[in-house]
Image 1 (cartoon, rainbow, N blue to C red):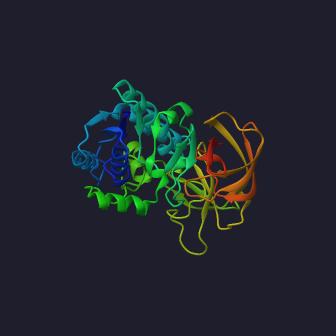
Image 2: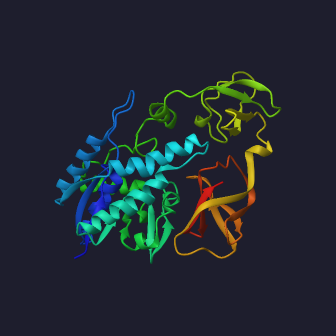
Image 3: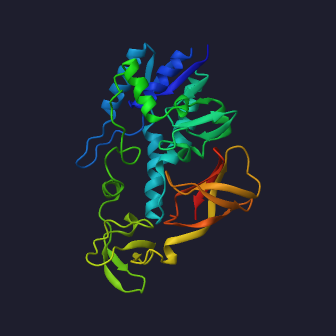
Length: 342
């Protein structure tokens, strides 16, 4: 009997993952990964509640349960990566880094060293023959966040709910009487729950130096409260009242300036050519040719041409392409990999 360690976050998705694998005859152990426990101003970290919820489900399923403390590594690999990215003026994705460095590297290595044959997670994605595929529920598909996982890791991983929709997962949990059946999904960035990214950065870095907001004609129209808080395409939170809404088109960290426009057709808001860095291909670099690309989570797939090295030419212009975010390449429903937008 194969021994599977299931990453149980205290949510319904990982709870049903553990239950399904037990039904399928695996020797299942539940593992809570303690990645973040720090309270933030006005918000208490929910990790203790999540841990208790995961443990409660493990008791219901009559499976062993343990906790891995990855807080130190998570701070270094995910949190510091994110904060340094914002300080450099880009918009990084901590969820992608968490999957690369923690769930499918640190957790996998620790579990295998602890006697597991495989790990499992509650991701809405599918693994087939060492390939990563999109989840069948297009509204919940999380394959975008998983493009930096290696083929070796996929060979030792299971994602059983990738075949299901979210309503089906909820129904399964209710049918099994799981304690987390009605628990709401967590919101916000991956490690701070309901705290927004700006509040988190303020807690980490403190208030930032104000600077000028300049419109498309180079006219100073107001002040920003820290250039690192602004991302390409952003509309809300600019503090510029009256008239047409403004959208962020760029920023200069050295000059501490943020550039905005009222023109949605402004060329600075749109891109057709993407140069990618920090490339990662799951099953080897794809050949030059036609593929599909997703430029942010839940963004529609866009047809593109890959040059076989590191450049994508999109069939249609896409708005608010943001340096630091990931462009993920698909061949049908198969995730090929991708890179960080330069």
